[in-house]
Image (cartoon, rainbow, N blue to C red):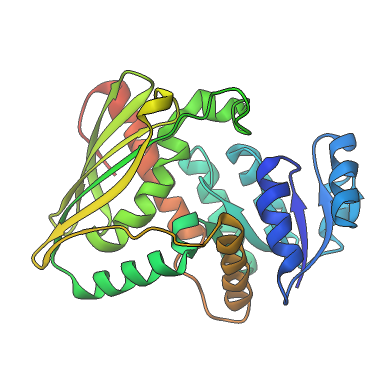
Length: 297
């Protein structure tokens, strides 16, 4: 499958392109970015074609991997799907339910395959943990903490405008939800509260009757970073397993394989419809934190 990358930033260069170039069943053929100079530099590193026109890139590939801010991603994903190209997208899918719905409509209308890269879901140890424990059932609570500190000198995401504006809810929230929903089920209502250091705390009620809490920030004090997921159920308490030797590049390689499978008729659970449902939860959380009310999802 011939892939083009849309985006030239750190994630595109160090994860997406590296994984695509190494994948035995994918060919990285071209890149498009918003800066012609960065696009050419990116192309030179990987020995691929630099495109100054999105449609020209689309005409030369079978699929696209997108590494751009969410609202830019959503519009380009619609454009690529309408051109018949399979989609390997990043999270969050979009920043509004309407934009996410437009991507779902485009994929539905054209029949292209889609995979959205929720990193943990493509780590083999995590995937196995979630599948086995979802089958076991009986989970009634989960607690997630994701305290990152990205706005420090030297961090590759320190200058990310959309992350500064939308914070950990939209950047880390999709990661947290992607490993809570498989065990506790869809969210039906929620409340939210803001805290210091741009922290947001969510209390979620799931359709199974279970409840979960998420605490998220991108701007924790440097010595207060923390990442952990705990689950409680009829069979005991568990924590999400560590990645081991896996890296984001390895995980993205598994996502490429998943997209190839989806294009061959084996859909992956992390498709645009699933990602759109998470956009709906995040939108409801934004409403809840603004209005200080319980919001139905």
